[in-house]
Length: 276
Image (cartoon, rainbow, N blue to C red; front, side):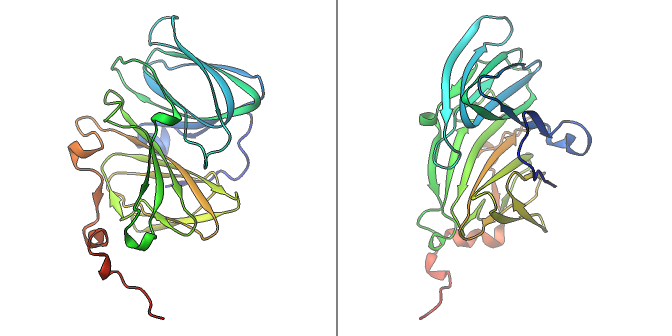
């Protein structure tokens, strides 16, 4: 399923995915919060765990540790752009209060929420803690080399019901490759550099032309490779919602690579190339 959002994000909160209607089976809420310079915003997590990922600008963050008003942490964060700078991501449990005050240039955040009854300590994941790798490097004649940034997963946030990260698609190259699938629902949200860029994805057997600020919803078993057009860098946020008794990751042997395409990870001499 594709959700288009052509205009710039407006001041305030723009919901993109909700836990009702046609997107209820995603089990997540997802949206964009855009604040003016110096603007303040308070958000209670209620019965949900919540994540706040800084997309751009600067802000002061203050948060409590679950129920109660005792401040657990406070810090200043900034991010000049999505492509060259790793993310700041605040993860808080149910009952928390998050206070945001935008800096001099304003601030834009991606907000993710899902139900989670478990108590756990809030955590601000810094850019230095974000695991960044050139995935696919040295294989498939570099046609699927991309930058994968993982904010948190079961390795460093096993109490969460989410896995969250980013991908930088290098112009003209593939990501989410080889084609794979998993039972857990996943959200992809795209930005391009320059903004008029585009890419393509196939969700199952359905192709989609993806543009700046589009969102793709990936459901159980849907295969989802991506490619970005030459000349245009692709950034996308990816959020996976664990299922009860089936966390995404090595314990459940996910992702599952599509069998006919697994060979591309093996003998590289078998990959055809033109002769001059």
